[in-house]
Length: 56
Image (cartoon, rainbow, N blue to C red; front, side, top):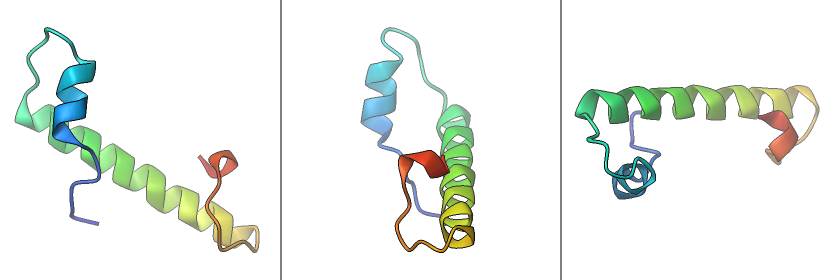
C-alpha cells in the first residue's frame, strides 16, 4: 500500500495552528498502512472477510 490513506487537509486541520511537516504525513501514512494490514490479517485469522473495529 504505497498510496496515501490519510487526507492531508484533515490531518492539518486536526493539528490546528501547528505546522505539519511532510515527513510527519509520510510517517503517519505508514503507521495507518501497517495498522490496516494487521487488521486484515486478524480478520482473516478469525475466518472473516470483513475487517471490524475489534481488529484494530
